[in-house]
Length: 333
Ligand SMILES: [Zn+2]
Image 1: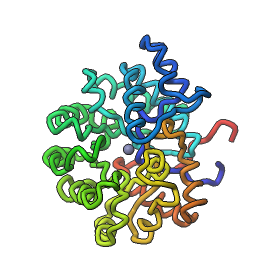
Image 2: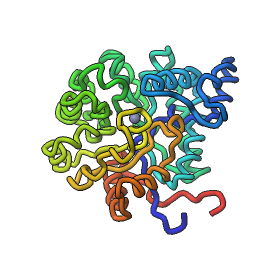
Image 3: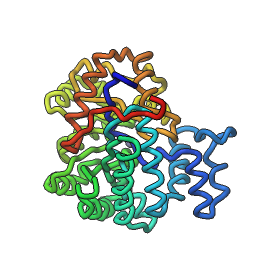
Image 4: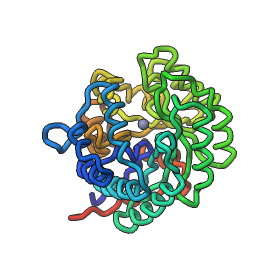
């Protein structure tokens, strides 16, 4: 760790960072002792799923026992420890208000617990955590507005620095959410939209990216894979300094890419698109950020100079102006 610059992570989902041990504890807490067996592999130490549909089922199961502010507080501190071990000094963490609300839960007390957890994460682990609530695309515009109203109420005072859109990209165009994201920008918060992840959509996946930046004013795109096949779109992302949150091993885990070597990382870097590496749903996929950079170095030609470029780009793309750049100290350092 010593002498290693701090990492920044801008695309990591709180729900997707649940550890097997925490899933056991939450399942006990909510009277669902049968749940872990349906989520974990034979070792009990890793999550198991097959294909994208299998992943969505797993996500539904694990989030079904994330119900109280205390649950989210515990998840946040677990993630802080993972980020510390990854050498991450600053992270923006997505929290699906859309999923909370469809379960009839109020994001308000949850966000208050997350704000408290962020203070503890700073003290205990030296990790700065900020929050990116998001809406779920297939739940529609009305639900997204309700989620945004909760996020706006919490505001920067509770560590909310932006608002996002996740969910099923195939379910509809981001342009439908344009008025909502105009409100997000007017409130001075950042916009990050998952787009161009489902490359099997073909031209529609590229159009999905264009809608996110043109109609919704996204400063950041989650995944953005589809842009790689379109030199004009890559050039536009570079010219407008739209940041792409790349998540290579997530793309392999969900089947968006057949293998890691198929990831178009070099196309983004060579076109000058600001980007960095991220874990997405880290524990569900069995990933960490340290391994993400190591894998990109081994299989995608990522150089130390590229990593320095990515770090500077991520600092510039963060939605908080105060980005911690000192690495957290790890136990044993
Ligand atoms: Zn994501």
